[in-house]
Image 1 (tube, rainbow, N blue to C red):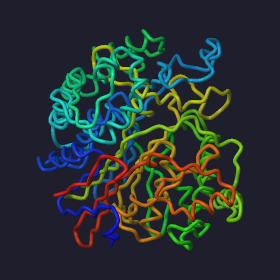
Image 2 (cartoon, rainbow, N blue to C red):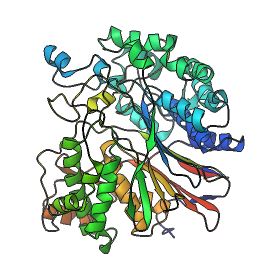
Image 3 (cartoon, rainbow, N blue to C red):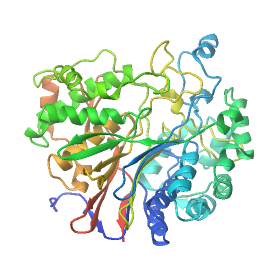
Length: 528
């Protein structure tokens, strides 16, 4: 049990269904859908749609998503709802136009949005309720307004200057040229109309309609290479998950172009290095965690990309021989300084999870990449575009180099843990851009190595090694921080929190769902 004299929150318990998201309005909507007879897939789509309205800094229908769906007792399925670069996008274009970097607010940062296609495809395969009913809550919030929550208001204020740069964005997302403040009511009526049409027309309503024409015209006016054909041809990819064993359990991730394999690699290294021998808040644990991050991100940023354009053998990455190579770079007495682990960007996202009365489980993540994405809003539809294209490299022969119809190496990764009978044990995810793989590893260790409950696991202090710095939260023990500095880490104490997260643990023996939601975000776990 947590120390009651310290700030914190209790785990949430339920028997009939549960949702954990990073906004209360989204969690409540998911429960409403479950209570109407919808299943976990319906509720996850509804929750994601609501967050696409009420959390515009982190997600939206102009972005991408990934999901893991585990129907009770059946093999989990990966859903890849990520978009591709326009067919006309290639290195030759960027070189000829002397573009050396894809800027955050450039139309070239906008890859084809994949979320709506994934929602509709998931619904078609697994849903129970009508899509119109599932999207109605999001439509109502967009049309009638909602109060801006605390963390969302903070993100809004931080991006105020960027939001002024696009006339459509300025008109919708600013009030008297200023960001919407905590408690103020925000509406996006054009987005409400768009959601209404998607509910009726489904995939066609977004990818082959007047909405499509509006999106293409908006981007073309800014110099984008997008065509209606790029939208028409978009597809969601359903496949098996990739997985590995850990302490008599199976950790499931989505395959590339998401970096889920890095979570599997990190957990294998934790096992090989016996990280759990060290106290959970010890210097040794945080040092090894930082070193694992460095050696794994060096691989991620130099060898991984869209598997349709690269021959990448996952089994080689997770082999004992390669684990030996990486573990030999890690030393308790000094730091490793990678030469090629610089990451292109560190974006934001939302993660949510839903479990229904039949124990169908959805682990779901939806994003527009950086805060408020590209800050480009379509002319007439209220759609704010992602800027996932900034994750591409403009480098010849790099596995993540931009190319027409190619998917960028992603950051967003839903997670799932099952037993060896394919029964879900834990549905979880960690937000925070590039932090996500090590964030997942950190939470999994907290639960399965240190026996923390899900809320404690999410609350626990965090550190993140990125681009030569070790970012630490203010809550990390000062004695641990001093030891990290002494061994050679360049420590930066961050003003804001590192990431966020949600978890639902399934206690099959007692017939209870146990939920937690990260206090670093606005959200909550709720069940009935």
